[in-house]
Length: 181
Image (cartoon, rainbow, N blue to C red; front, side):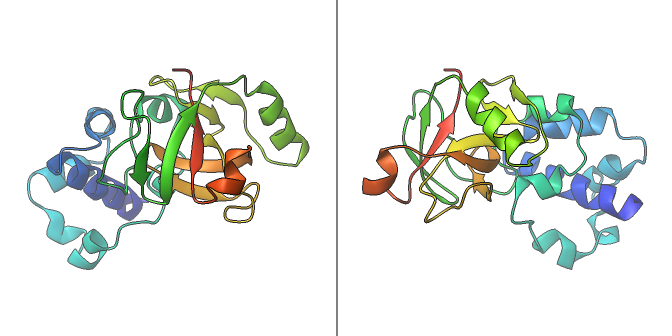
């Protein structure tokens, strides 16, 4: 368990040093009962091993596995993507898995469809206005590229494909992120 916490701490510290993920890293440092964050911050990265430091997980959800809703609500970006983040003012960006745009629709029915399909989670809205199903961001995508229920990394974190739209035929690589903006 300590090794997992140290790996998470190292990943968070890396993003803080890169100028990203500061809210989550601050929360992790405040609630660090094992000393892992302080050890990494003090330069004790050797204990975690340089191979682990170089190996980034493919999804933010792997970094945040088992995180509380409070930690997830504070997330504002992907923990494995250092590029541009989708915002209301930057309405179209190239993210880690393709082009990202946003939409604001009532996602209650989409969440109910996920539950009916056997996916566990509840519909809620993150502090930054991103719509969530359990620990995942809700997105619309082309099902031929990203099948229903698949997990995809976005600039805002790990998403679950739960919707599609007319855009999907003409822009198959685009992901539409559900937000409250």
